[in-house]
Image (tube, rainbow, N blue to C red; front, side):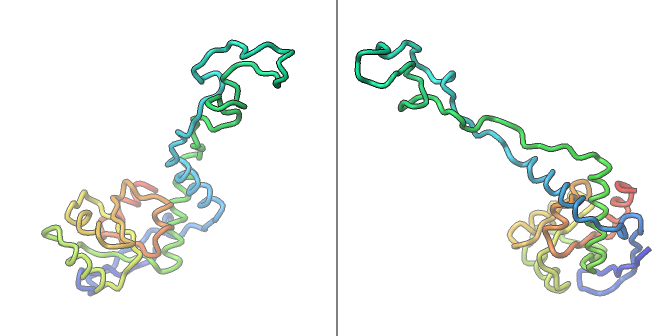
Length: 206
């Protein structure tokens, strides 16, 4: 197991935490990470773009004029795609962009993402934030003391003070252990874990 320093809000080392090798020392394969990140991103697409085909357009199906003798080109229904207000030939229709990725692969990718942070020495651990109120300035001071930016913070509880205090700080995101995902881990340069989340992550991924 790799050891990492546990800091307090003043940036002082208070203890050490052990990061289990099973989770934080997994060989990284970019193809697996790419597959899971794509799985997450396409799931966010609504796929609601649509238009009407000639069968959906309201209008008569009567032939506009006789086939021959008028000097005009042959014409059928007013709903023809060639006419204004007619249907669209190859337009978009509602669809799902979701792709399937096995749970084992998603779990493995999460381990790989955490391992990549450990390999780059961009995982940090804090004992607690101890925010008594919703204060953006107070949280910003703690992060400045720790010299951390472009940061994903993982908390083990529904800490509303921490969540609401972080909203106006750019490039900072707070999520709970249950919401830990590959895309967010890779999106942010640094990862800050509240000390108690290590056990929860181990329980979720072991």
